[in-house]
Figure (cartoon, rainbow, N blue to C red):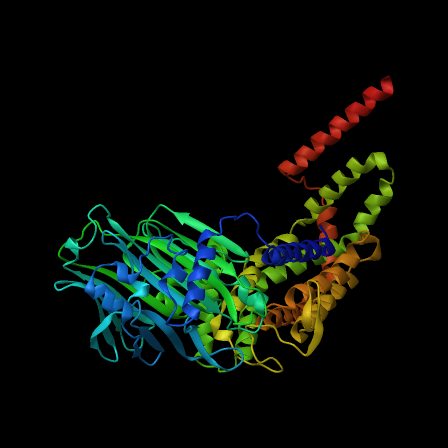
Length: 617
């Protein structure tokens, strides 16, 4: 296979996979028809947004008719809890500030410190009246804690205990704790005297959490592509995702879930159950671009919590994570949170986790400019794979200098019926000259995992978020030198300069590669595909992706062009290569035939025998 074919295969594989990935990102799923939970949770959130005076009747549909009015409880403690005023308490450290509402004893507002939205506002992962956290208990009638006010028992900067009284000696304490320098919020339910209150026919309660996840990044499509719901089974280390690139998705579980998280591109809200959730369902629904309330998606969970081991005094331990999707930060909690970052499958993910991320973070200790870090990282990668680059170039050079010998074979066997014989002679020439016809292809294919790992790394790397370089103010989002004011299908409503420069560099590399090939070797249509179609297609794909990714591809193309130019100018003497190959080809020593060559010889003999039989007739 000549140099042109090797390059075409490499670029074609990259282009096809990236095009399929882009198409899959924008494809709207229609398989999920069950919208019950999303419809119900919308009703609940709407009720919350109406203010603190929203009636319990407004939420009846969401609770499937199980909630009775507080006045119907026939219990003075719950009546008082339903009529009390809402109070707010704040737990705060250097990383987060979390407001807890006495109504439902639930997280009401979460501020992530040291981070800002794309328009430089404070970053609230949980916004007021945009979250609903509810416990549904059976006490011979269904009680929903989101409609009842807990009273404060203990409150400090780092701990908070809120109590819901059911009787003189029966209550539930919601205990929150926030350690210094941590994104993890401890959450414990302490049941005291509740064994006589809870319905003995029911061995579980329901936990419901609905969150309107806000828009936090500049590019809607890119943010949506990397957002969804993540979850991990109790008995498995594997982390799965739900809802990414789908307008709506829903999943039901009958196996224990260790934790689930509502994952935005760079930030997540995660709930961990120490004892697991034995069953439940998760849903996710994306809001359209330009949503008036700035909501990216609505994520919901309805989980069962086991009460089988209840006694007169027992606890149910949970914990929340409200923080960034930073690989080492997530990994430090030992729950497998870091696997929510979409770094690819086993092979690609391994390269990202154990090679690219450690190298990237090591460089960031010494260099403050992430544009320079990407440049150095690209050079390091190119140095590591330079033996493959050398092997690919030398294989292509050998194929190129053998062109005169190939022409002789073509002149010797000009007829169509001699095609098999011509192929056999060509293979014999390659074998005698010691040239592997796949030698130019394989090095390119071996580099592909690294290329794909970088494709997954840059859009998911929070380190690049809001890091500027040259004209780009955020390497994690697209750069724009011109806002069009209208949207071009598959391209977008802006012009990314990094994507354009990447396309030009790809065109230059393809042009250089093609210029090294004799015109007689050009296959019809292939030159247009390699030199023009592939660069244009890549510009369309990368226009809405991370500017850091386009910048990396630009640098990679430029360095490869420089490598090939330097190799040809100073390290390779093609005349000498031709003489050496010619000597090998003219050698009289017998050549051991490969299995492929043996099959080709057998096919040729069978063809000749068939032709002789036909001539006899």
